[in-house]
Amino acid sequence: MNEASLVGTAGYRTDSYSAEPLRDIPVLSESFSMLEEVPFRPTYRHAWPLIPGLGMFAAVAYLVGLIVQNNENVGLNHEQYIDQNILAEQCPSVAYPVPWKELNRKLHDCRRHEYYDPLHDICGVCPKPEPTDRVFAVYWESQKDCARLVEEINTRYITHVYWAFATVNTNGEVSQSLQYWDDTAVMNCMATLRMRCIKQLVSIGGADCRNNFYSLKEPEAMTRFIDGALSIVKRFDFDGIDIDDETGNQKQANWDWNKNQGPTVISYLTKLRQSLDSMQKPDEPRYLLTWDEFPSSFDHAIGGYAGCSFSAVNAGPNGDDGWHRCFSAGITPLVDWVNIMLYNLPSAGDYSDTMNNRIPNWWVPTIPTNKLVIGACSGLGCVEPLPPSNQMYNAAYNGSVLYKGCMLWSATFDILYESANALKVMGSAGNYGVKMPFYTLDL
Image (cartoon, rainbow, N blue to C red; front, side, top):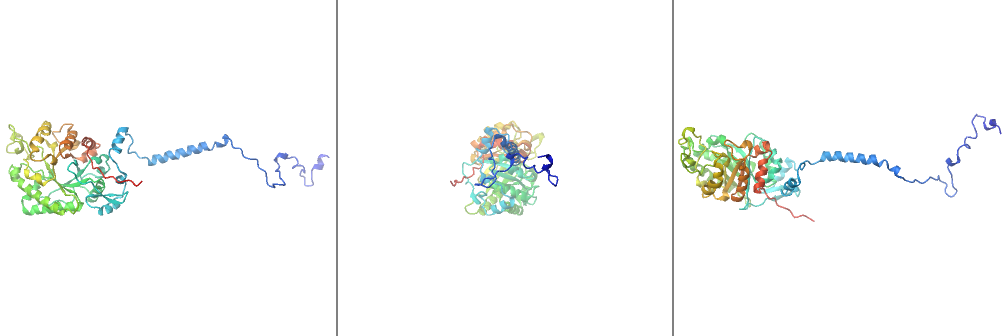
């Protein structure tokens, strides 16, 4: 057959199919009239897509980890982690975040000695005060954002906060707002601190309004003072009052505070004590009343130094502006404790003698050890002459072992400018802090 016979009338080759290899033509079977497929035999070379897939998964997981990473414990060594996360007794039910609005609404249903537990949605009962309890009280000056206090991890050592200050006017009125800051913000901070059972007192007075306390000799001014003090306690739902009356041997007291101003102090403290007790609701703890005292108020006359009677009339050429006074013994039974402002000593050299001799021998016979709180200062809170560098540790340790506790002026300076060093040093030195209650686990 010649080549022409292979070409059809249309010009196409008629042998095109027969020229295709037989192995590529589908084979049909009479018993199974379907296309027969060669079975797939997997090999390692088919696994190559897993490599880029796993890489993409790892990259996504890494990015998510960066977004949700908790940096709270970054940089801590093993001992620091145990100290902050185990010994500190942190509890998820307390640290559970709650919006301010919801928290305030929930706390409104809780009583003064209770805290709101968001994990269980209940009002838990704070630990009852015990004679062996130790106080670590700190001042917070309300001109600074109190959110810094709430967010500071070393706040776990604090047992009491003195909110400073509610000032006293020339006619005896007590300001119904704290200095410089928004009341709502302060109340929000108080709400969060209450979830840790930290007691909170309003500090009335301060050095700036010291002379206004002399107006309380007038009955009308005394009435306004008592009414105003009770009113601000109710408004903020404070746990009590800290009195920072810094009057002294001044001209207004005829150079003798104990004799001429002491009776006025005893009078208003008595009225405050009685009024706070009458405000107390059934089954609630007693409202606290504390007093701040100069560190020289029990000093004896030695040589040319008149001791606690030191005033402008006997101060010599250096003069004096009334920062001395002799303690009035009638204060002791009216208050829960006395805060010794040990950082206001006239001389840094007096510190050791005051701590080792004057307090145990001169103070304690009038004020028992369970009513003495030793004060310390932090950084910018210290004034000339500066106390010894170890004064924070000494105040905290001795306060815990020998007395009622310690006090810090102020947490504001410490947290904002000193990285909360005083809170950590003092808190750990005296083993301070509120021991929150534990719940039985449902197993």
